[in-house]
Image (tube, rainbow, N blue to C red):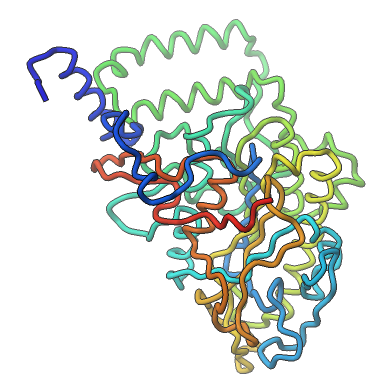
Length: 430
C-alpha cells in the first residue's frame, strides 16, 4: 500500500479508527471475495421477519416439563402431556392456552449448549460467543439494530423489558445500538416529558447551549465513550418528540386485553412488546426470570407455566389476527434445560442441564406446527438434528436477513459476526 498518497493514507486511518472503535464493518475488505462463498453460508434474505419479539426464560427452563414431554418415562415425573392444534406436537399440561396456538409454532427439542452456569449460559445464548474478560460481544438485539437500523425513526430500534433489562447490550458496538431498558412495563417510558414550566423554546435554547459547551471537547476527544454521551441526549430528545411515544403506554389498552395477557410483569411486558412492534420497534426482548428450579421444580414450573401460557398465547393470537405474525419473529429461549434426574431430597428439584433443552420460534417465515429435533426416550441426550446455540442465533439472523458472513471489528481489531460459526436451520423455514 502506498502511504505517500494522501487519500490512501486518510482512507486507511479512517478505516482503522472505525474498526478500533468497533463500528467499521471491515471497510478495507470491500470488493474482496466473501468468506461466505467458501463456507456455503447464505448471505441473502430467507425469512420474512422485519421485527423480533425475544422472550427469555431466565434461569434455565425445564424441557421435560414444558415442550419436550416424555409420557410414561420416569424422568417425566407427575406432569401430564396434552394435545395441541398441531398434529404430533404435545405440550405439558401447564400450557392449555398455548396448545391452541401451536399450529403457528416450531418447537426445537434438540438444543445443546456448551455452557452450564447461568452467567455463561445467558451470555452464550444472547451473543453466540463464550463469556470472556477481554471483549464484550453484542447481543442479538444490538446486531439487529446495527445491521438493519430503525423501522420508525422516532423510536429506538432495540428495547429490553424486565428485570434483566440492564444486562447484556451493545458490547463493543456504539451505544446507539444497545437496548433502551424498560424495568417496569406498566410504568412505561419514564422522564419522557418536559418539566412543568419548561417550554419547547426554552428547552431548545438549553440544548443549543449544551451543544456549544461540548463542541470543543467532542472535537478533541472523538471517542466511542464521548460519542455515547452525546448520542444519549440525541436519542432522548428524539423520543421526547416522537408522535409514537404513547406506544409505551399500556393504559391505552382495554382492561380486558391487559387481563388476557396477565397482570404480571411478564404478561404486561409481552403486551408492551406487541405495541412497540406495531409501532416500528425492530427488536424487543422481554425477560421472564425464576426458572432456576433446583427445588420444588413441579410446583414452580406450574406457576411459571401459567404466566407464560397466558402471555405467549395472547401475543401469538393478537399478532396472527392483525397480520403481523408474518413479519414478526417470536422467539422463546433459555440458557439451558434441567436434569432428567429428579432430586427428591430437594423437594423434587432439577439441576442445570446444557446437554439438551427446548426453544420455540414462530412467525417471520418459520413453519408452524413443527417439532424439530429429538431427544432420547428419557430426554437425556439429543439423538436427531442437534442445534447449537450459534445455529439457533444464525436462524434468527437469517429470518431477519442479516448476512452471516458480514464481519465487524472489535476495538482489538478482531473480526466478529452475528452468530459466530453457527449455521441456520433451513428446515424451519416455510
